[in-house]
Picture 1: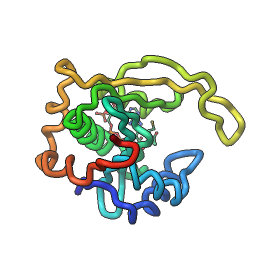
Picture 2: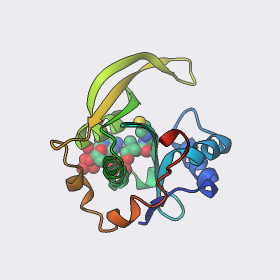
Picture 3: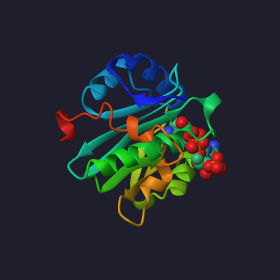
Picture 4: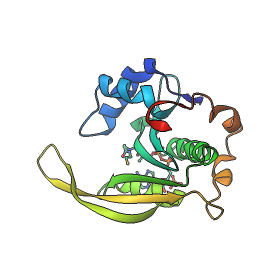
Length: 174
Ligand SMILES: CC(C)(COP(=O)(O)OP(=O)(O)OC[C@H]1O[C@@H](n2cnc3c(N)ncnc32)[C@H](O)[C@@H]1OP(=O)(O)O)[C@@H](O)C(=O)NCCC(=O)NCCS
């Protein structure tokens, strides 16, 4: 499955996939706005998975990650994370953060397997459509010699070509 940098024209497909994965969907406009400045990569044609990351000097935040239900548990999220971590390392990012709902066991297991560690909790961070509040775990991954991103990424032969294509140099990224 092809991995490539997302473009503005991917916004509708990304919004549709996001809607199928999350209680509170992001609109096409939201994706269009984010895609103008943030780093994003997609897998598949039509798109079956994507990741979006915001960088700020030597830190980054994973804004969203989604895999189509029929493709879950096939290693797509691992592949996207491996690419983005390798690309971030190349762009001098040293620490990556994200928030994940405490009851999102699939995502918690994924990030734990990659090597993310919990560094905090945001109380009642997510409000469910039924009004129920859910805490978020704050997870962090440190890009240093002990977290060998190359090893994560080496399963993909195209990684060195792909990960740098489409890396945004303007806007909030730098
Ligand atoms: C969480 C999500 C991104 C995982 O994507 P994926 O492509 O299925 O993940 P992978 O196939 O790369 O799985 C890697 C590891 O994560 C863990 N994992 C993934 N899905 C899991 C599940 N449903 N239950 C338990 N562990 C799971 C496993 O350890 C898995 O390794 P294994 O298959 O060898 O056991 C996907 O389920 C998804 O899109 N969920 C809805 C949106 C979401 O929650 N996004 C994350 C927001 S922070």
